[in-house]
Image (cartoon, rainbow, N blue to C red; front, side, top):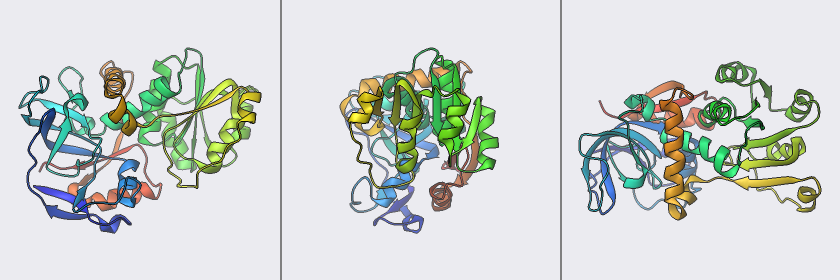
Length: 327
C-alpha cells in the first residue's frame, strides 16, 4: 500500500512516500480502506518526536474516513462495505489502509456526513466536545473563551459550546484575517491574542469567563488565569506554541477560586475508551442534528502531506485540512 512515513524525527521534510505491506486486522480491530485523512497538530507532534522515537517506517495520521474491508475476531459492529470515520490512537492514517480499534470506528449511516467531511471529524469533534463537557464541565449559562478560535477544534468548539448552553463565546487568534474567518462560527467577539486579557475583561464588564479552552500554552495560558470568573476553569488540550512547561503556584488558584484541568484523547483511549467513545458519539450527534458543521478549507493529495503539515506548523491554517488518499 501507499503511505507517507518517517524514520527519524524532524521537520516536514522527513515525511516521504513509501510502499508498505497491507495490514491485517487482529482481535478487536477493523481494517479500513482510507478515503480521507485529517491533518492535525498531533501529527506534527508525532513527527517532531513528542510521542517517542520512531521505530522503523512510522506512519502518522490520527483520524480517517473510508470503507471497512475486514474485521478481526470479537468485532460485532462495523461490517465490510460500511462507510465509517475512525479515530486512530496509534496513528497510521496517512496510508491507503489502516487498522482501527473497533470502539473508535463510527458508521456514517444516519449522520449526514460525506466521506470528505468525515475524514476531518473523529479527532477534532471528540476533542472539542471532550474538553468542553469532560474537562471543562461546561454548564448552561457559562461564558467561554476559546484560544486558537479559527482552527479545526476551535471552530467546532465554538458551535458545540452554544449547543451545550453557553451564554457567550469569545475567541482569540493570532491575526486579524483569522479573526474575520472565526466569526462565521458564532463567536460573540474574536480578539487578537496579544493583549486579549484586557479585551476579555472589557467584554465581560470585569467579571471574566467561566471556562477557557487553551491549546496554545506559555504566556497565553498564564494570562488565561487572570480572566477567570469565580470558580472558572482553564482547560488545557495542547501545546501548539511549544513553550517550556509552566510552573504554577497553588496558592493563587485557591485564593482566587480558579481551577486547572486537561483533556488528552490518547490517555482516554488507553484508560477510559468507553468515555472517549461516548464523547465521540455525542459530538457526531451534534453534527447530525445540524448544530455543528466542519469547515474544510484545504484538500491535499496524500503525496503532499509534508506541505499540509508545514502550513499547519507555521500557524497559517484556518479551519480544517484533509489528505485525499483514495484515488
